[in-house]
Length: 242
Image 1: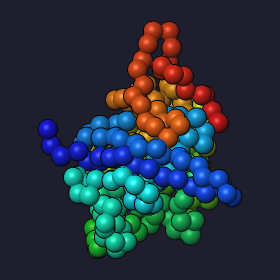
Image 2: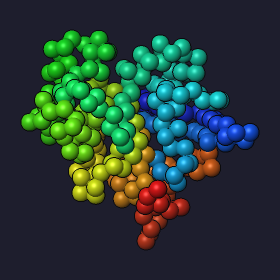
Image 3: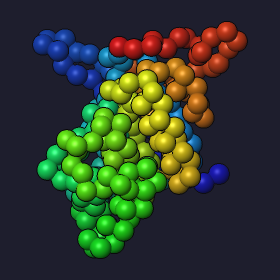
Image 4: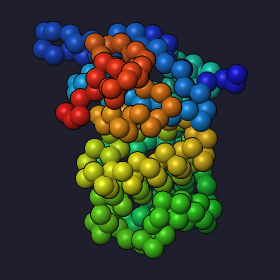
């Protein structure tokens, strides 16, 4: 088997709350292979966003190791971490974080130019991605002129712009109505599967989680596989919201 895209070894993360300490990650292990889509579930406040930030090199663990294609990242400096993140990792957030003064096309072009591509090459790639997410007719619109679902589709295109090996998504449909969430999620799965990207997607929606390759649950600082059993959406139960 080839080198895992993402490997988490014993991640520990503790936050201070006044004089108390809250251990959010208590030794998390996870391996993610190319082309694999994994659902990350757990109660609100369990630390799913923290785990995604650790996986995406946005935060450093207190202990443990994050490996990207086998490369240990704990001792990388900030410049090296930024370069690796830009080249190998894409993010989709619940709040899309699009740049409001730029068009849909420009939002997908900019991360590519930051990675060193020419404006012409970046625009061509952006056009292709916006067509894949069904927004070629909205390419010149700024976020304020797009619906919530359209904005999230632009965010997906932007996350995939630099052809990342790893996609991290934090409740990507959480702010959308049920019908729009279904459209956006189906699109996300389709694009990720066609590109062979590894994906770790946090969600509270058990129906969406069941459509991924496997499910892991974060609770009390530990990550455990979730097994499916008859008459239940997922073992251990997944809250429908919160």
